[in-house]
Length: 163
Image 1 (tube, helix red, strand yellow):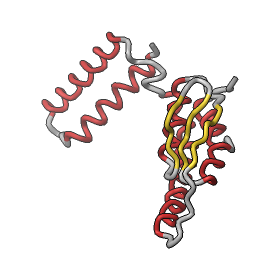
Image 2 (tube, one colour):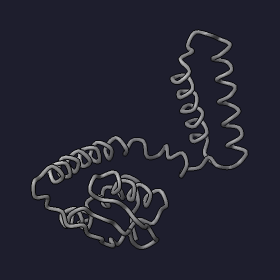
Image 3 (spheres, helix red, strand yellow):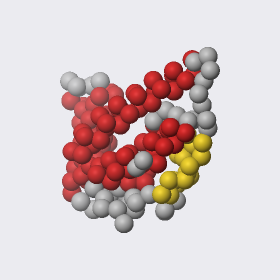
Image 4 (cartoon, helix red, strand yellow):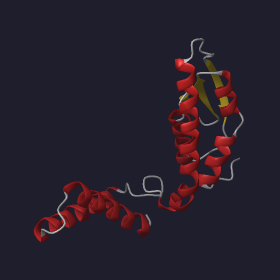
């Protein structure tokens, strides 16, 4: 367990508490917020649930590169799906593809599967150690997943070397 993860969890919990509570000037309530944050972090620490998987602080700098790319892909796919839906002759061809994965870490597989599902027109159905089963609205969508571009970006994001 790394001290950085403990500090990060405490910071995120307190920032969330302060933003959601709206109490900035009441010393008693802010003190109670600090106490409850400290208690939550202490219990989490004692349970041993603070680790690199649950608090991926190390991914924060690379997230600033990956998230804009993913948001752009989501927007492009959104437009594509919307145009197909409103078209008088929708060009859809539902397809199931099993895509092999080089990702080996749990966090890498989760980020990859969720990125596929977040992109409109594709859904991750099943993830195992070697591959991921994807349902795509079109053959083009399936080909885009099979091209491996998203997986390469996830590998760079989670800093995996693959097999």
